[in-house]
Length: 284
Length: 284
Image (tube, rainbow over all chains, first blue to last red; front, side):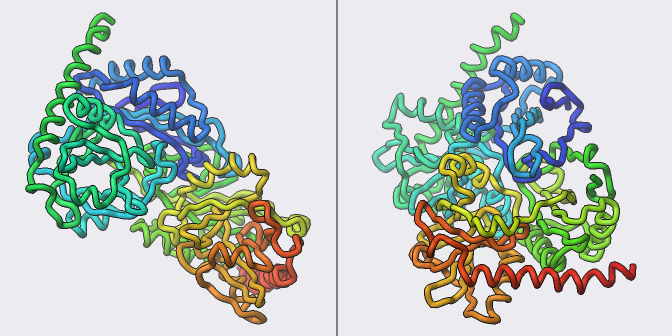
């Protein structure tokens, strides 16, 4: 596979970064991740918006403009020829003189084949546990996953699929996904503050708003317990029903009606985006 | 300068790591840092204890035994010939297949000239601000300094030298140093839980115990406000008086008597350690 570092394409086997980079020295950097659907990068502008926003919030100067990034992304799609892939864009704190002060950021872009969560997986749903934790500067998609990786052993022990963070009684997010609840009154709700604003989250909020009351607001642990449906959203998982939380069954223990509707509608949205976007590609 | 990566010495200009390393991908790794005094690594066994403990807590398998590490450290001292230096040992999550699951850890060791905080700096003391934050898995010396680097802009704005973390009314630690208070009753106290157990902290507790009541226990923000002396400890700063906290003067605004005594005693301890350790080096 070909990757891109700073200003050139390079074979991933040869792709490296100097050890004084602040990602290695201090875990300091931001990233973003999106996938391609039949060679089309889905919702690309939304992801690039977030990438630039994360960089701004950590005072990292991006090495490329939006248009330059798009050119590089399409060239990589052309070179690697992976139909369904995950793109990762990392912007680090750069080479640091003293191992603490950021330098000129280094930029790394990789493309890998990615498996999208299947319909079988949707039907099966997932089992989660809770953990009290607030991500550092949560509105930034930073590379800091210390807690997430640290908790992997506990997930294995407790035979859980994922862990949901909360703090001071407020439900927040999963390490790599957002959470939604459907209330008994049929409102579709996701936490509004202290979370990463996921792109799938944004699309699902939009879709849900067509037929339901869709809200970004505080979700308490009590709200979570009383929810009739709970699901997560992520770029590679789309929507996944949460069927068990700390050994307590959610609803009737099966994917809920509204979750299923939104899942179907989200896949349609992907299809529409693809149809709209592939035209300029064909012309090119 | 010569650095060491995994199993060999290499010039630092050529020292790099593959981009799939979990430090780059997920900011996942541990490190430790100690300094040399006239070519002698101070309190080396204490630092290596902590290095191995951090690795264990994050389930990272060290690539070298304690004895192997010592051999590499002394060879590096011999090669680089830096009288007063800082050694940094980093153990990362290694090359990850999926960008999330740890692989075989990569080990990086560097040695750089380091400036030790001067007596002038001690007399001048420092000005600090407070910030509510608990480090992830605080007993681990991880490479995660996202919050610390994020807060640098605020330090500049507020003309402060450092930031002291606290949570739920309990004083914790600085991003790279521990905190001590001297109570009005003359006890020397440092927070016991949810902090990194610094090596200078450990030595100062020991020294303080000779003449004072020395305690590891909860320090509240109230205790901090009422303290007659406040100081920090770190490997490169030894002890540094904190003379102003969020614009409030500590004590009489000058380095306190007990802080000064402990500072002098700590430098004596360094001298004693050096004298004791240099003998086997000379024999070698």
